[in-house]
Length: 311
Image (cartoon, rainbow, N blue to C red):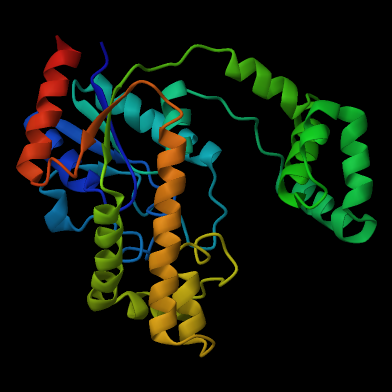
């Protein structure tokens, strides 16, 4: 049996600390599963673990992309899969830690994503979208892939162009590819440990405090450094919670107090979305941080679940 532990839960719930403790105890390595921690130079605002917090444990999939790079779940799986296989091949315990549920589910599924077209094809489609309009391209998609076209809104430019790109690059509609891969059984059967708070107010208080701590640690300086190095303010990375709000402050369009409140509110809403995603599954062993208030208590509860899992 593959030794894989997934540590999941909302932001600020203590996933990093638990993953490091488990890695130290079970000879493991951590594979980050966070869609923002992949970006270089974005350390404070993404709560990327420091060297001290890593506790000597090897961590993977941190700082692997440029902030101006368009990163995706497909790219994540492409990069993380061989790392996971290598960790297991060396007899180590793989600990998948993060709050990006789509990335985690796709990695454990072993999902194969439709290939990318070449840059010339993408530029051609972008040019056509600008000159012909999205209505024309959506009508074109309706003729070659009606199943996909039916579920896409006219304003969903990115997915319409992606569907056309896949068809012209492979000759196969993306809906056919997705149906085929969805029918495949999962590649891995991990133990999923989820952290949550039965008293949601406690989680929100942790989130609010974390935002203030990020400012103390130098988040504004980090953002200014990214801007100075040429980061595009409209990139996916710079539009992340904790960056886009403080960008407005640095541009003089928002007060610092309002920016802080906006980040705190955005983070709380994100935590809700994370929990909605995770609650779709019925194979998660939930550890209640409202009861397990100390890190040692969380670790002990996790070890019990691992004993049951490993037999």
